[in-house]
Length: 475
Image: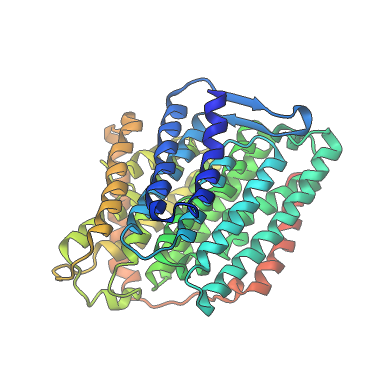
């Protein structure tokens, strides 16, 4: 299994660069990579024994692959495959498919890294590949959004690297476990980098503009898997180092509430989905021991929602209330919205039940409010008018069927969720959310300020977050 793991890690990069030699096979070569990751991810989920690899003695790479890794890898595999199928009949060049392979491989690398320097290298590669995909259309707008993302990402990773060096100075090791013995400033610096990279709390307010202004397939990749590369190490730290667990959980609750607070009032469909990405990442952090399953469910549903939103007749939700959608498109949108709201028979139900059961008492009120806010937000999609006649390409339906079908199948990972109490609670939450939507949100227009999303303020917030993190770790 060790040799298979090493080959699996290296293969996306080899295939990605080989696409330039065989440009007529670019789609076929690219789609083979997530299929291999799918098999590897499933194997890790059902294998009870973790796989640990130490390369180059104390100075090299440490890899750890277990059930948690398996859920994140499976998410990457299905979302990447869906995005590639979505682009199958498009005019994307070999360059696009090369970057998709490199992005996929570097995301996988994050999910099995167990040392700070290997993680740093993988995250930096992700930053470059994501920038190239965001800027792929080569318009002034896409280039600016890409450069903004790259600048914020690189600044965050500079803080992270300083923290990693302080860990090594203290423990003479870059292993994750060394973070627990490091001084408070090291932990604060590492957390700041990962919180920003993962789109968590106010450090993640670069995310709405980046995800909403990118091309539809790139938005699906960013929200489905890329931001989880910042979340995954935080989940690892919470599981490895008990002292850090309360901090991770606290950011989970804060992020869930912040994201949903913006999403409820947002009138742009893609920005609403982007704010919900922020919120749903909070659910992953709020219960680290079950974060893998929630990450899988969120990745599937959010990538499906972005692909659907890219094919709606308008991004403005007010305008969409006047434009009937075709029945098949509305059904797809409703299924995804039901899943993220926690409706039974879809994996979003099991993920929310599992998460709520893993909360500690002080989290319960906040996370239930976040769940209620989620149902309010997605009522905007569920209650859109139906009866339109627009037709969509076959290349749209295949990835949507893959993602929505996976939501149904993944529901089987937690069959024990289906008890009367567990079923009634989310249905009541959904019912209350719909009533609030019809009684208040649909009738009230309220615009939250966007000033904090400006680039100069994003960088300024990092210094404030660093002070907050230092105080939290010291306390």
